Structure formats: C-alpha cells, structure tokens
Image (cartoon, rainbow, N blue to C red; front, side, top):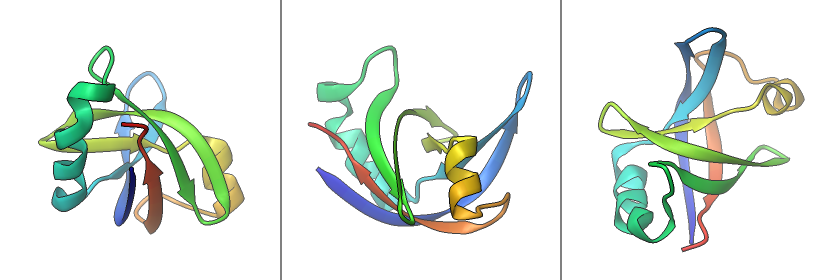
Length: 94
C-alpha cells in the first residue's frame, strides 16, 4: 500500500533531538486501517521516500496521528530543516 502526503518536519526532544514528519489526518486514517496487520510493539514499519532519498523506519502513534522519523542522513541529502513541509511517499507492506 502506498500513501502520498505532505507534512511539516517537527522536533521531539529526548536525550537527543529527533525529527519527524507528522502525518495529516487522511493519511493517518489509512495507517490506522492497516495497523493491526503490520504493527509490532505499537509501531508500523514502512519504506519512505522524501525527494530522491529512500529509507526504512518505523512510525509510531502520537497526539492522535502518526509520526514518521526522518533520519539525519535523509535530512542532509534532501536539505530538509525543522519546520519545512515535505512531500512523502510511504509504503506499508499490508
């Protein structure tokens, strides 16, 4: 299953800052529909693409939606900074 959306890059501080793209409500609803088939430990494994950069990660639920972690290598390759709106192609193997 492939989902395309745009979302803001936000920061969530922990021991180190982490960057995420917040899924909009319509994309989050699609993930909610398939999460039972693919989730483990509460996260949903995905393949994602921002710009020309493909990466794998696991999304997790937060604040009524899903947060897609954006690796530092992806942010550097695509010149993405905090607050940018980015286009994402997300693939979930459901």
